[in-house]
Length: 428
Ligand SMILES: Cc1ncc(COP(=O)(O)O)c(C=O)c1O
Image (cartoon, rainbow, N blue to C red):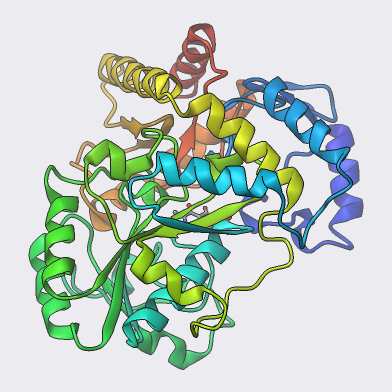
């Protein structure tokens, strides 16, 4: 794709914005994409190129770009003159919707981003349990706050034994002693989880887990694994947090907890909650959540928490997806992509597999079964990057990182899916 205007603007902006992007994941070689508009399943860049979007705002887009009902709700809210730092009937309506839809949401509190929701959740559970340590999953991402920005995609040669992973920061700039309160365990291994939890039950406040580890592509929980985590945490008095920033509202209206029938104590939400508008939430059991009632000991702050345009966008989004037909269709579309991709890979005798659920998926370049970060990391990185760059040249906007989730939204038609598959075949 020719992108001369993009290059010219990128050369200018990278002088005043490091990397020319405001979240490093948006960087791409040789230079990032600069968009003019989005509509439904499509994005249009400033050079006039059209793309079928499979980044879908990193999972935040559930209905499609410029969804007319969400856009109208936002327009109407603008007329109120309210922006942020206030409560309104719209924010009350949103809290009620979440309480109705999400199994664990006896109480709910809004924030701005997924990182903030997780950081608030960790403060709440530490305040509630009076314990400091947090157990997280190797290969899982729970935002960029100090406690959890550990062992997302560590280099395998530095990562230590599979069942006792070393704690490795994803970034410089975190105080060395911050990770003393973090414990890392592998996904899909209830035996290790039980051992570690029993050993740390006096010090560990919570186990936080993405029910499907989309931040290492798309790692599905083994049958019964989440239920086992529920039982082990309950038995040992440790709070179970589901990080549903991606799975929330996508797998089912009530998220992964509804889809898998396992109710955590606390859960975090963002992304699909408002079809791309910035809002997030912590939801959980009343007994735990009420520690952040004013005067009860745990601070909960944020000027932009539940800002008016975003709560309006969220109510308009949830009202369209609460019946479950959107999720059913996206689950069917994802299964279709998996099956058709496998046919293509097999035809070309390639060791590749597309795994996904709820409109999020990952193409792994390995035929190994993907059960945890270590198996996901067997995917061929060079092949993966080449594939994604070819996809971009074939008119599909995709993220070129390996071990990353791409996706579709409700606006992707059957024709869109077939066009994505055709581009995938060419790109392979
Ligand atoms: C599971 C999960 N948790 C937390 C986050 C952090 O969310 P945000 O980027 O809105 O801070 C993300 C973002 O990708 C995520 O996927």
